[in-house]
Amino acid sequence: MKWEKLRTPCYVVDEERLIHNLEILRGVQERTGCKILLAQKAFSFFYAYPLIRKYLAGTTASGLYEARLGAEEMGGETHVFSAAYREEDMDELVSLCGHIVFNSFAQLEKFGPKAVAAGVSVGLRVNPQCSTQEGHAIYDPCAPGSRLGITADQFDSEQARRLLPLVSGLHFHTLCEQNSDDLEKTLDAVEERFAKWLPQMKWINFGGGHHITRTDYDVPCLERCIRRMQEHWGAQIYLEPGEAVALNAGFLLTSVLDVVENEKKIAILDTSAACHMPDVLEMPYRPPLAGSGLPEEKPYTYRLGGPTCLAGDIIGDYSFDEPLVPGSRLTFEDMAIYSMVKNNTFNGMPLPDLIWRDRSGECTLVRRFGYEDFKTRLS
Ligand SMILES: *Cc1c(COP(=O)(O)O)cnc(C)c1O
Image 1 (cartoon, helix red, strand yellow):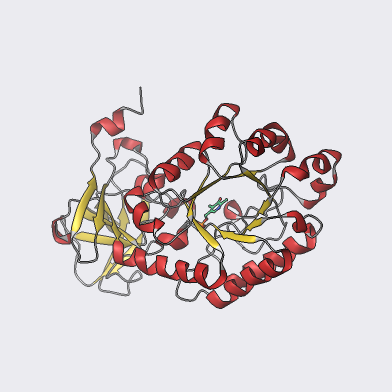
Image 2: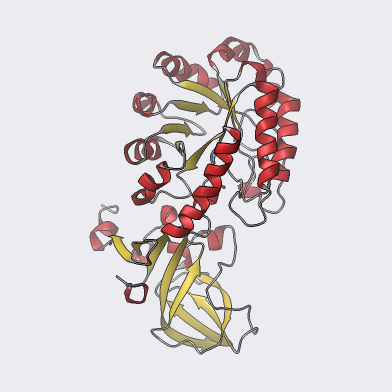
């Protein structure tokens, strides 16, 4: 199938762009000896897992389902972190995961002995209390009152001292779309607050949020950060980026259904911000759109919105060289990450097709959804 023939709406994952990112990540692993895992919560298009496995060490998961998906479809190492685990999931997690990260000493007490007995390498997520981002409190695990990560003061309890012998790794995740200068600051905080417990650690996991494959990312500084922690603590370093793996490696193709007017021209698309790109509303941000400009930059300006009943189902204001008419096709860029994994069928919206575009430009339909996919979750 050719690009022009694809039915909209559809997500297209692009092999060449994915490989571009994977080569950068493999370079970091080869030069430093660190291991990089795919954080599946950002990108779980498992059709590409066999390819990703050629470059990365495995996957990390936020719970049982992602752990199982990683183990079944990618293999390699399977790690998991959850803010709290359910008792009934633990047996399966212990059999699927080589590494399990706990978010409290209470959870370590409850499940740690079973995990260690099964040969799992147990870690603790720590909170270095070092905010390096402004504006997005919902994406800042170091924001005051955060439930994510154990603060250093809690390591001095009797319970902590009793349980620490079970622990062979520390995990922190504090960044979001950030560069390696912020990682450097975070490492200062981690070493300052947790120096007492770092010598016993076999591994340190730097979490995700490293925008490694962005063009202005400082890779040499990242590699210095990795070497510094290897040298100081003799530990295996893990990174678990989500975004960086599939950054700019996917598109969302959509068609204009209608153009209406109310003070400005508004194009209604066959895709929805609320259903197919919820981060546009949550983050919020203005997704890049091929061939478009800022409002009034080009001759024809439109507000782009979805067909749902939500008044705020607005993607943004964009301008074009030509007028939009019903049937015009638009390509939103950087739509592989935090898109498919967050889809919903609010308003009975159909789920977009999933397409793979290989290096020759040929497109393959990987999955098409229908009415049953909507219905089966509802009764
Ligand atoms: C979200 C998350 C990641 C991946 O973050 P990206 O911003 O997509 O790189 C990794 N680890 C943990 C614990 C996370 O919560």
